[in-house]
Amino acid sequence: MQASRLNLFSFSGKTRILHLSWFAFFLSFLVWFNHAPLLASMRETFGLTDQQIKTLLILNVALTIPARIIVGMLVDAFGPRRMYSLLLFISSFLCFGFAMADDFERLALMRFLLGFVGAGFVIGIRMISEWFPARQLGVAEGIYGGWGNFGSAAAALILPTVALMYGGEDGWRYAIATTGALTLIYSLIYFFSVSDTPKGSTYFKPKKNGAMEVTSKGDLFLYLLMNIPMYAALAVLTWKLGPANLGMLSEAISAGIYALLVGIYFFQTVRIFQINKGVFSREIPEIERYKFKQVAVLDLAYLVTFGSELAVVSMLPLFFMDTFELPQVAAGMLASGYAFMNLVARPSGGLISDKFGRKHSLLILLVGLTVGYFLMSQIHSGWSLVLAVAITMVCSFFVQSGEGAVFAMVPLVKRRLTGQIAGMTGAYGSVGAVSFLTVLSFVSAQIFFLVIAGAAMLTLLAVFFFLEEPKGHMHEVLPDGTVQMIEVS
Image (cartoon, rainbow, N blue to C red; front, side, top):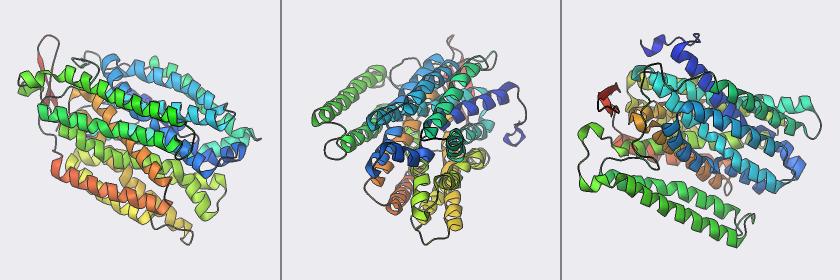
């Protein structure tokens, strides 16, 4: 069956799993970004400063970095059905906690903890890869990611109105709590409605747990190098909250966090060497090898695609509100245009990759992304609002199509490690968000967009020189020693 013949109107078999999974992701994004369109109400309730608002934006994506790594390992070990249901269940109560916060410190803590829900994306990537063949995988993953990502647009579109419907100064609290209630209910629905694989299929698990397996000495050192930015992003966040900036953390607590991050990195390094020590004593059989540079380049590509989307979705309602002096509801609806494109853009990126080659498609989309952010950097109050929104939507098409192209390739690297690879790639999206939002806390929105364009240009070069087009088959070994060939092209 060709990708173009995927029947989205069906609710049976693999298509049923796709619909149930993208809606789980939709709810996770609805909860993750339920604060963005209501920031003006929170600013009034708590008397928040601009720096405190920007701190909330950074905190919202910080925990997602380690969460996606950890959840990626857990989903490979325990399966997506259990993990998605558990993640939604826990996140609903974190959402209730955010809605009930009575001061900025508690608001910030709950926003930080809600970054956990962003790990849901990783779970669905593994689920979809189990149910769809390679020739349909790009468009299926694109639909999963794109329609799920629309949860942030839905938040911008409906939550200000929901808050007004509840009325009063606590309307925003009830609107946010409503998203938590929906997530709680769906966690049970998902658990009883899906299975990890089609009937009769094998769910491949990593041979060892605790770190990703690599297959050469060079890949091992590249893996260690690629772990550093994830810890660096958390260190930057600590510095931003520390006494030199916002003063939310004391000098002693900041020093303790830095020491903890260093300690965890070295502990993980030891664990990585323990799991992969075989690369120093023997040559890994050709049938088990994969190239970690594929993972590294996809990490960078997701940093500038999804990382920039997270950052822009967080700040865009307030940017439109302040730049064009719009009311909160109108600004939220216009800003939703950026995320609205997820409905078609991310599936389009996957479909283009399926049909015309994954590397070339990603290159073209990165070029469009770079140009789009450069044009957004030129927006100011003298612009026509219609033109500003149009440029925003065009840029978002390339951003989200690029995300689809990245995850059209992620499941084709190594099947049994798909959760961990998706987790690391997804974590780099959060690294990008933390990095770009930190930049935003020091510069104007125009410079912020320009920095993203520059990062996209560098990533374009990395994709051009180092990424390889998936070809032929990847191999997995069944518990009885039988080799299974999985088509990747």
